[in-house]
View 1 (cartoon, rainbow, N blue to C red):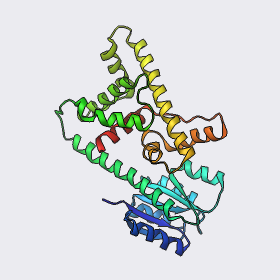
View 2: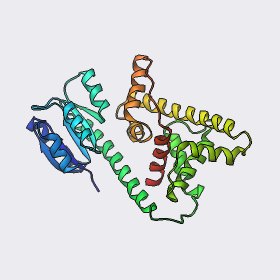
View 3: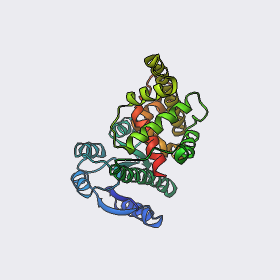
View 4: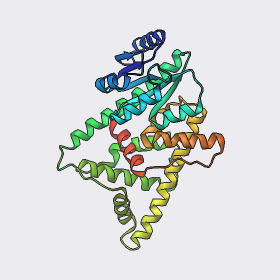
Length: 289
């Protein structure tokens, strides 16, 4: 099912162009349009679209304020900012408030289609995972997970993000499949619990804490390498399909942005990594394909 898309821009010509691109390329269905920021958040929260195309400079309220109101209202859709303003400070504020991508004015058809397509893929992926998790909630006696069932998918993800063959990849696979077992059996878990279980199964109960700490460090290095690779892709080509697929799936997008800035400016800022988001991003991608 194609995503629903809401357009907020005070330029009627821009609205018509975006609508034309969306309809011509069958990118989604138009959920609504607004030409002012004054009531935009209220209308978006009512419509609950999958994707919002939001102009940065709007009459009534600018795009930053609309983003803040959407966050306060619990909006979970994806936001793409549209603007001809090359203002790093304003754009950084927008990224901090959850926008996924940025489209430049004047509009370029290839750029618009590429950005919306990539965001739509992420929306579809997350909806698929929600459906799968809902189905799994009804399985009380789930069979154990077959390594062969998802092994190829695991390897492809590792290859995509440049970590296949690193020391600890086999341990990461064990961690991901253990987390998948927990999901299938409706078990909530803490990531440290998974590490402890895997460490005990692989290396025995003797020196468990020492082995668990070493395991965590190896997995952390793998995650850091993955973020470095993805940030490098984004720094070189913001529309790289691998970057688009994984930046917000395995990491917090704002943290990837920090790492990209670190690469470009040699700044001291490093993006933080959530181990659980990384593992669950793997699960989402593996089970949704």
